[in-house]
Length: 632
Image 1: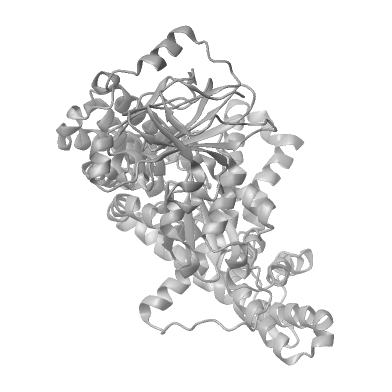
Image 2: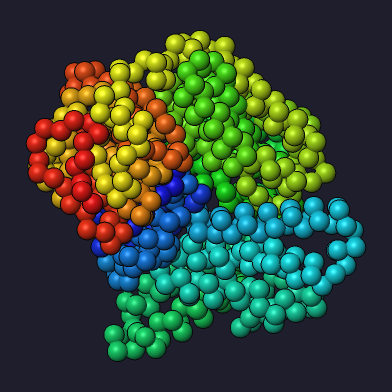
């Protein structure tokens, strides 16, 4: 998706459809998804959420309700947090005694609970881990260019900034874990921070035996550790819950926190932190075994499976293992290489589609999404826009990921610092960068080649203008003369203009997205309603947005529920970012086919952001494409 959505309205629509702010325990995000922790997921209207402008898809997995937004994620997330006062990853329910529906305890339910807990604990710090890792990469590149820089105070300070998220990882993990559980995050964070306090680290450095209330304390450094914080957050949650039950209400504010951090801290130093350290060490042994003995199987298999894990949202559950591996044994030979090679394979499959396509619009879209996968590391637009709808390219993705994974493992590619899964992050492989580069090339080429061979039918796909019916005469004249003023709007097609409140979709009829008008189409070409910038154009073609020169933002939504067709029946005749004129064709629509499938093809023109302008429309009735319908 392109930019310039009405982010506030998108956020409002999503929050309303997931059950309202009162149903949201917490809201986090990763690179492309809003990650809701909902009180009652049954209250979420998933089909309606999928129809919200800018939403690429919805996934529920691992205890999280995920709304895929792609590059529009951050502004929508920020609007949701600010406008609805949601807790950014923290539970809103402060009643720790609130009853919850118990699910039968099975191996599957237990596994999903653990997976959801670990994934939610790590999610809030993912962007920080990537940011710190990429800063370390930048510093590495600078020192390669100028070796003297490493001895400067600037390097020392910048290196400290880069390392901070890793050194203080227990605190960040404790925050995410406590938020997932519904406890008070600061209690878990204090217990985790105590593991890094100078008093304790000095004792570790001294190396003399230490006791706490007569109990032995294992002296080990917990900086950059993951598992101890997960255990501490659990302890803090149950301790807080226990003390809330036994301490009288008048003393809760004074004693609950005191008792919680004291008990959690003592148990943490004596039992939980050492236990987490032991578990981490055993995990490191597993990572080393996988990387040194069966890496070609592990990396190849994981890279091949990642497309499906990404669609289920479960790929985030692997992030803790990446972080743990970078700390101990000090490199990741399995997880991050597989993630990178999956992204490259997604891009390669898009290249295969683009090379097969004879249609200029499809070819341009495929190549653009390939660039996004390879250089920006964002795959979901490629998955949902190109590869998954055509099915066979997914075989290419899996083949490319598997081939690249095998090559990476055989050549010994290893990640030494956290970073994002883009070709620009290859320096995170440090001395194994050549091996990683070869594996990347293999993943891209194999995915492109397999897709090209398996998908000859793509050559017959037609999305270009020579297949479109003649452009309405009125619109053609407007295009020729460019006579429509910047503050006016025109009819988007031949048809009948009607009251948007009568539309058979509550989202539009209630004007939650904004006021406007609707059209009963008689024409297969939907045109621009005004002069301006085509700020948003859905890859599926069912919707687009424009920004007028005066800042007014408009949305055109073609049909109701037509997003379900994943682009079938729609042909984009322009691209996001284009400067367009009123009446210029934007989308070609196969009205007959879509109507036969039962879709209501009423098309909405919505003023998403009037920008303090007084927008008015002429009386309802029959209109011709290009006719002035809004005098201002």
